[in-house]
Length: 107
Image (cartoon, rainbow, N blue to C red):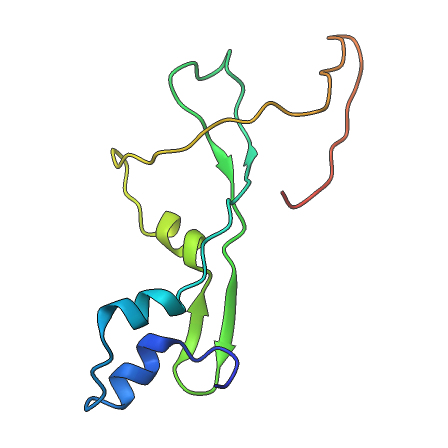
């Protein structure tokens, strides 16, 4: 199978294929947890969390532009939609209020 071609692409291309559902489910690898950087402060928005998310895109010859699975789901969300998640405490201690900080990174 070519890179970027999904099982869905193959099933759409070969419409006569009707694999049993258990076989299809066995082919799907478990999803790994995704970690995103929190871009908001609890003091500024105590009832919500803003995330910093890179929208992963790539091109495949058969089918054009594709998006990463989780970032595409997040990209399609609308205000008011809900998402189940968990917050994992970071390993960095916040600086004192009189210290200047420069943070660089993509997530």
